[in-house]
Image (cartoon, rainbow, N blue to C red):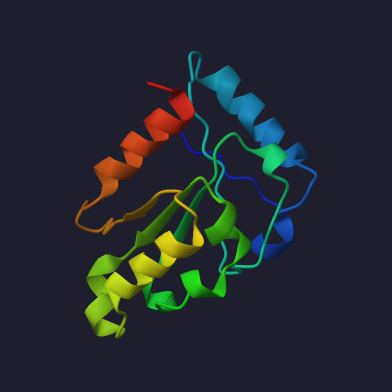
Length: 142
């Protein structure tokens, strides 16, 4: 149930106002899987300043990696500030990359003005259920 969209460019330049390729992929998924309730569109990359029109999505989940440093929230990138849910992943790596996870979490909560921030370690599954619950509540309205 995964459909790759080849943008012909690096992920940073693929986040644009023209969603044609993504819409075509969504249509194909919808035809292939009748009754489909949720489509996730992933835009890989490491550019925290990348932005796109919020009109293109119903729900914006932004995942950052502990290994990127505990100053990521403090940099106030648009993804951190504007997303519906911020996920701080790879929490198990914090001691190895000298990241103060408590500080990172606190600063994320401070700059996000009450919007949720969740911690995960996807390798172990820790925190993943909370992310799924947030998606179900925020997107599927269950």
